[in-house]
Amino acid sequence: MSKPDHLLVDIASAVESEQSNQMSLTVVVQGAVITGRLAPEAVWRERVAEVLRDSERLGPFAAVFGSASSAAVLRPGEPPTHLHFHVARILQGSVGIPETGGMYRIAVKDVSAWTVGDFSYSDH
Picture 1 (spheres, one colour):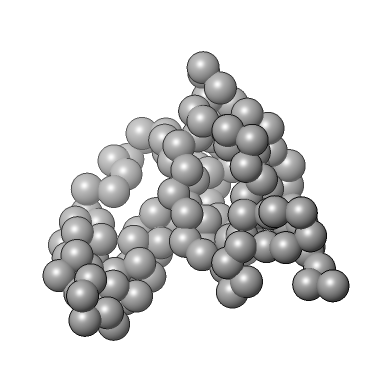
Picture 2: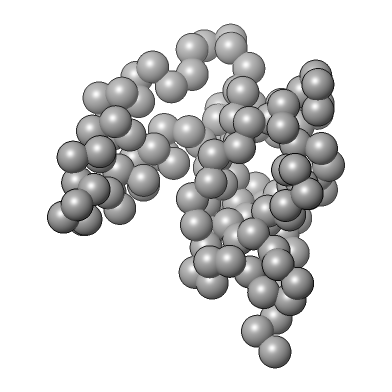
């Protein structure tokens, strides 16, 4: 989208202000269908930092996502520019990748279509 969808920005703002991670959403970004639940950016960053801290090779990168940098996440009154998905999957045919769900950060301006809810997929 050349201009971000105001309704989608309002949804992202509600997730941020309510600090809820229960909003299911499916988006299309450059032809890829991504489905999952939105999380507030600070919560998303902390979860990514936790995963990185558990990695021997990637541990040093945890600080980039951790609480020290979370203070600069979203300034009051500033609309969100990104969607932060957790337990998200890229839908490929009848399979969701990764199976367990991943952590994705997507620019609102790059979303070409979206719907509320997440799509199920089948391993069969």
